Image (cartoon, rainbow, N blue to C red; front, top):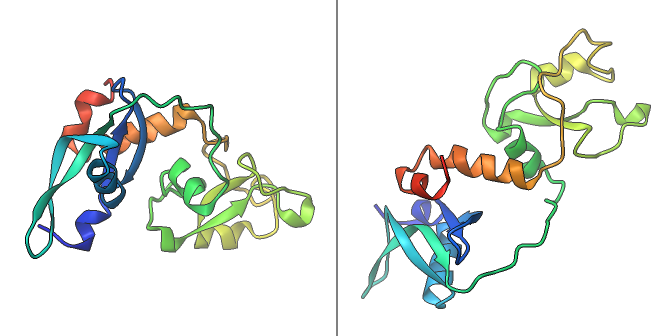
Length: 175
């Protein structure tokens, strides 16, 4: 297999110490390998091909020099809220594609609710319409998980979840 689809596949990024630190697209991972910043530890089934060259795309890469990773907070974005909530409506627990999910302010903005990690959740369109401009309690709905900021723990948990789809990641994710 080759083509653009393979270049978008997730790649596990390990620090020089083999500690998992990130997930990036195969395109970015390939650039890091070609620049000599990282080494490929595991290859995917995808191949990047040009007229004269065929390169297996990485599935796991390791940085060649140790990078100190400061405590980082993730940007508050729609994508990160969906990742945190695993593309699952936090009211009816249906897992849906991003295009079928909205962001719900648990405490509506019109009632002073802020756009924060603790007040935003992934929500399907029917549940968002049903909840309307009310709190979950007022709408007779139950929020299944208290929204929290995206932390290093959340990030590592998501790496493990993504790792279930790629056997090559498992030995690096400390199961």
